[in-house]
Image (cartoon, rainbow, N blue to C red):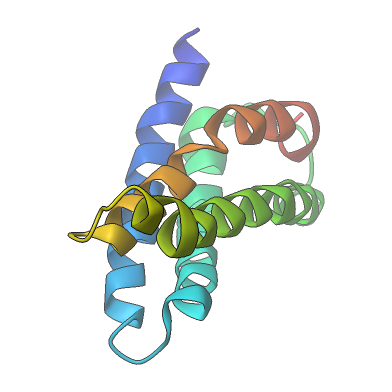
Length: 127
């Protein structure tokens, strides 16, 4: 649908913020906490964009939307973190990947929760 396409575009932008901020945070932090902090940065970006462009007709109060948005994203951040760390520390090294391991792992981790997040936000965050 058109709404899902706009969700993908705004979510893609927020994912870019997430991905790029993780690289920046990694200057000061280890990979695992940098992934979490980057996810939070991307999550704030995603909420603002989703409220303004994807679910702009939502009748739900902003504080209710924010609460459900956080709950949906708790599930998504667990997916992102688990996949990112699992790929970076176990799967990719076992496959012999030695270049851009953290970037590949984090990119895959960011992409995986797209569909589950859309469903959760449509049903709960911005109904």
